[in-house]
Amino acid sequence: MSEQTSPFAEQAELTPWDRVQLARHPQRPHALDYIFALCEDFVELHGDRRFGDDAAIVGGMASFAGRTVMVLGHQKGSDTRENMRRNFGMAHPEGYRKALRLMHQAEKFALPLLCFVDTPAADPKKESEERGQANAIAECILAMASLRTPIVATVIGEGGSGGALAISVADRILMQENAIYSVAPPEAAASILWRDAARAPEAARALKLTAQDLFELQIIDEIIPEPPGGAHAEPQAAISAVGERVRAHLDALTVLDLPTLLQRRYAKYRAIGRYQEAGEQLLR
Amino acid sequence: MKEFFRRTRKSFSSSQAPEPAQIPDDLWVKCSNCRELIYKKELNDNLKVCPKCSHHMRMSAREWLGLLDVGSFSEMDAHLLPTDPLGFVTPEESYADKLKKSQQRTGMADAVIAGVGSINGAWLALGVGDFAFMGSSMGSVYGEKMARAAERAADLGVPLLTINTSGGARQQEGVIALMQMAKVTMALTRLAEAGQPHIALLVDPCYGGVTASYPSVADVIIAEPGANIGFAGKRLIEQIMRQKLPAGFQTAEFMLEHGMIDLVIPRSDLRETLARLLRLFAGRTRPASSPSPLLAAYVNGRV
Image 1 (cartoon, chains in turn purple, brown):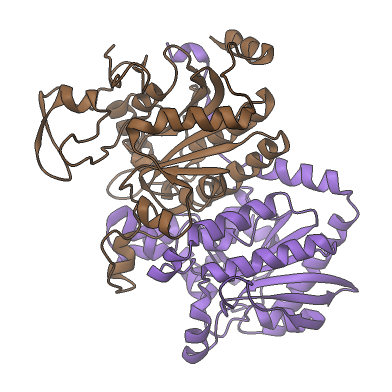
Image 2: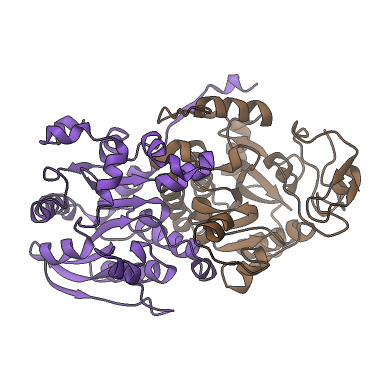
């Protein structure tokens, strides 16, 4: 699968842990790099109107490929200082509630929603628990489940657990070649499974978190190739490739009438899961 | 069959299910909270709530069925069996082996029991998690059963009750497990269209991807006293984030104080509270004497 999609044969040799490193590369382009390069007239909108403004999630209105869209993304920093400010892209409840506000605004004004996913996980601190992290994520998932506008989500780095899912329930899920999407960060999964975070590379392999794995598992719709060496090696090329594919998917979605769009979104998620339906007689 | 939950005639009734095998047949049980020795029969008569310290002990999914009217429960989707979609093998144990062991130990196919039943004559669709089965982690079978329960409630025009306990998403099913959060939540939109409520009961412990999805957007959220409920586990917050946690952090009472749930209800009052809510949602002052024809046909067709 990956061989077909990737024109870069040398990258097919990368291990899942190599991909994790590439997905986390500090010089990798982040959400705002994509938004500024791909959109015009971006106006960032701030705050959840309830508690505060979370720098780990950015969002706002912009013009993309000739139409007004709402953009949302987890925002990591490129250096330690910015990462402190952005909380390493780990959103707080107020970040998800800002996202929720902008989702509803997108629906209200019939703006397609473009999401850029790049987070290790939702913020797991005491204060986030107190402010209802679980509820904030759940509200976003519920809103996206039936949001009456097309949604295209692109994983541009790390897609980590519920924190990533909260802004990626979408009509199309795209992943860059070296992006990862995981039920939990590999370190956390290793800690849960074996009580040993040092076994993260092993967990990364077992979790099937690469774009190639997830395409084969039919979770994502498309793998977007990256330049040789990864997105950070040639950011402009990586960003353009994403823009082109997002535009193509958005074009395909905007011609659908709303009931069809929502029906397909329902069917898409409803079909995810692998189980066996044994004959009833086996029970008795 | 043991009369497991008969505290008073009108409160919890006995479950029609056999007593689960994992409960040891000892006469005395030690309370995991106050360490007092309790006569097992006394504990069971008290709905597995410690008579000394009121600690609410965990119950199996089968035991929770005792919340329903006697004989009203019909199990659905019991034939859904888990698979190993990722081929998850580690040096210690493969997922396939872990599933097999959990199935043998609990007598369950996976962590959820689903079906329809009634409380005080009011019919509902039900999904119950069982912590003894791999920490009631949410994988494909869990997600599918809960999603079908929500769709069934929508189709039958009855409320949905979910009883939730979980360590979170099942790591061994990777992103497929994560996506179950979206799948079950998606199914809830059908329930909302049908105008039927989702009542979520959170019992100890409930964490991660389960707390962060369908139960947290329920119309009414009830928790049991002292239940540990949260998104990130306490061990993670203390050891990785290096934060000190106050006493009572992430308890049901903490959740109530922070506005995240509606009610904290002791187990002894649970059935009555649910009956009252179901009456209110049904907009009638007395419980229906019989299920709707569609529901009756549905139940009869499956039993």
